[in-house]
Length: 190
Image (cartoon, rainbow, N blue to C red; front, side, top):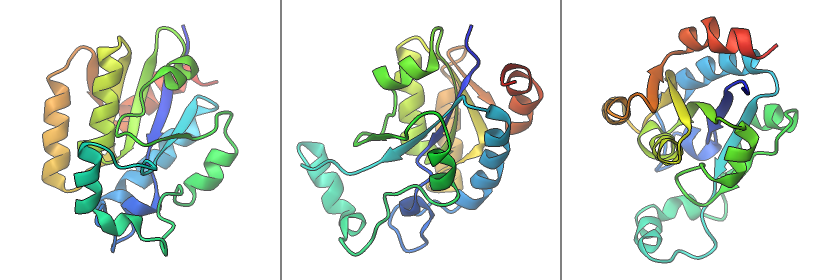
């Protein structure tokens, strides 16, 4: 049985920058906790990166009209923020780049192995984290959310997303960094 795969979701400049329309106010708090998970995860880590699609079809057209500032050509917001860019460069797996909120799919499933067990952390709890969690659980993966290593678009939105995901137990389990460090990661990453 493969060790859990730590999936670090969208720790990008577009979510860290205070002047971004997608600024996540608790990015820094989540980052400090993510660093602890990364240190314990060995090579069982994948970083994800959300990027706008080349064409904004269907509801994406309205979405990017609403958030047109993220598409400004003078900003390079869609790279991983440091130190995650450097950390991703030293991991076994290339960052998973996708134009959808959910990072779940064949690539992530193949990296996770069977049965797929994911530990999710990153931003934003109320968008890409919850989308990935629901898709993965719906496809039969075991999903754990390191709640204190996630950040939402607001504290209330973070709490609301956690409440929704809690309702998917036992497929989605809400966890903490301490719990992950003290149990699964500590025993499974050596």
